[in-house]
Image 1 (cartoon, helix red, strand yellow):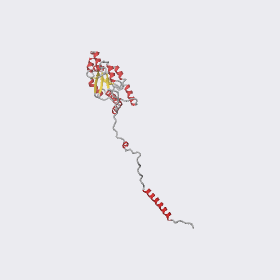
Image 2 (cartoon, helix red, strand yellow):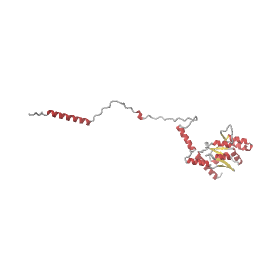
Image 3 (tube, one colour):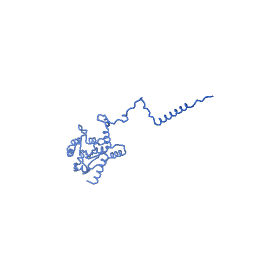
Image 4 (cartoon, helix red, strand yellow):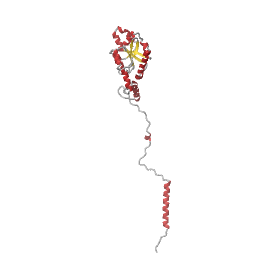
Length: 253
């Protein structure tokens, strides 16, 4: 494995980890075209994929991809045997299978919420993947597995998030968890959860005793200075009254 190719893969994986919250073990969604190319180039997918991506992987496919190989006949029998060894992810076409390309694109949706890597040689799938942000693409060139560089759609999405025009998947998840904690997320039946009210202590002002209206007012306390003034005034009046009585009456002769 070339050192330059390994460095480029590490850089690309870091891009998806940081901007789209990819974590190990990586889920690799594989179709029949990738298995056929691996068979022709003698690539052991189970052995080489974890080494190339430098982490644990889960190799998986869909029921539609398996059905498509069955209908194509004996030419792809070897690819079918390889694909059957991988885990089968449930798709929405269990009763009515569709083409592998249509099924893979439907598994990713508009935002690839399950963080799938996609391994394919189908140009129809590749063109559809480049319109979805956050989808790592794997394909085979000669006898090597290659992780494609991030698409322009992914780069534009990251730039929009950095400019504040969009909310990243990690931020969406944190918003959901905050809503659940606050009890404001919508239920399945469309109703909103009621927020639990915390018990509060009573208002201390409401616990004060109310004053009675119309009651007798308490008597004012007499100050020592007021009593002294009153006594001195009363004594002065008494002395003036006594002098008037002692004065002799004046008679005219």
